[in-house]
Length: 79
Image 1 (cartoon, helix red, strand yellow):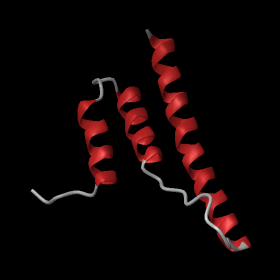
Image 2 (image 1 turned 45 degrees about the vertical axis):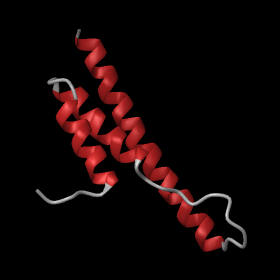
Image 3 (image 1 turned 90 degrees about the vertical axis):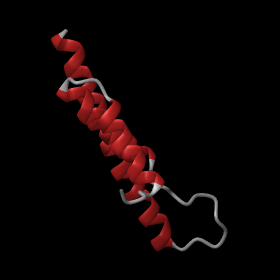
Image 4 (image 1 turned 180 degrees about the vertical axis):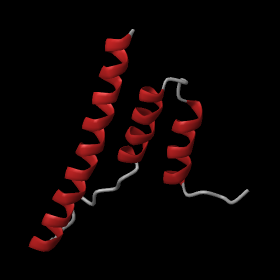
C-alpha cells in the first residue's frame, strides 16, 4: 500500500471509521478535509495577493464545514 500524506490519511480514516449512515460519512469526510487545509497566518510582509489567497482558502474551508454541519443536521432530523 502506498504511504499517504497526513492530510489524505485523515480523510481516508474519517471515511473508513465513520458510522454507516451516508450523511454522517459524508460529513466526516468533509470535516476531515477542511481540518487539513493549512492557512498561513501571522507571517510578516504579506502582500495583498497573499491576504486574498488566504481569505479564499478560509472561505473554502468554511464552506466544507457548513456542508458537513448541514449533513449532520439532516441525520439528526431523520432519527
